[in-house]
Image (tube, rainbow, N blue to C red; front, side, top):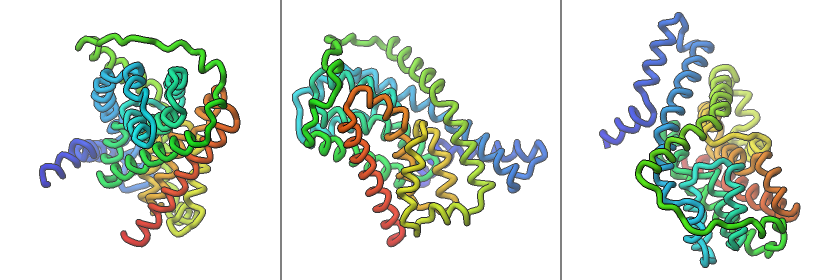
Length: 332
């Protein structure tokens, strides 16, 4: 356990980096304990840590993902139905490091291939909401129990959400052109060099896509952590406020960011006494229900199906957020 603790602190949390940045802040004449110095320390440390972890994790996960291209994933899911098919779709979504907008072309491809809506929506919900990189990053900021709890509740939302949407019988609510999208048959087996190139390109592509949101998220987190009084945060989002989870969900929906950009904000909110369920609801709303992704999804499904998707996922997020707040209030 001591070795595991050391690895968690020094490799994931990068305590050595925190100490180094703190020393650097002090060296330039800023007091790390002051608001300004603390903000600079928070910003520099989190930005460097997140980008280091992102680069390593995305490379490793993309290497694994290279064994599961959309064609193979479609074949794995094809011919399956029921709760186990939804579970498998949600699990496969965890190895695809896509944001909500990037997941929609995959959703179109799966739908064009004739996969049931229940399966495609479980994948669509899970892919941006839960991925292996987010587990490691959550553990690096919070703890392994919180990281694993996020994964479990994210998979539950994806599995139950896909199942409910499938049972609504709205297969005819998908745009006609989606059914006519040509489906690629066959699969090119990548060489080791091609897998290395694919993983490297994924790192570059995802970093280029998420870096503004990481910087914005860390900046907001630093401001919350050092400048916003805890009394104001708890008055709005305190664990004892019944509206904290709905408000956090409502705030999260218009935002567009990967989970990597929301983590520093979540870290700062937890530090100010916001309930775990409220923070989880905010993160899930940002990643699964971002406004740009809803606009893109509206292009391929009817308003009825879009509203059902929004209602099911929002209901799941609210329920899980309130449940976690209740658990932490009564038992922690």
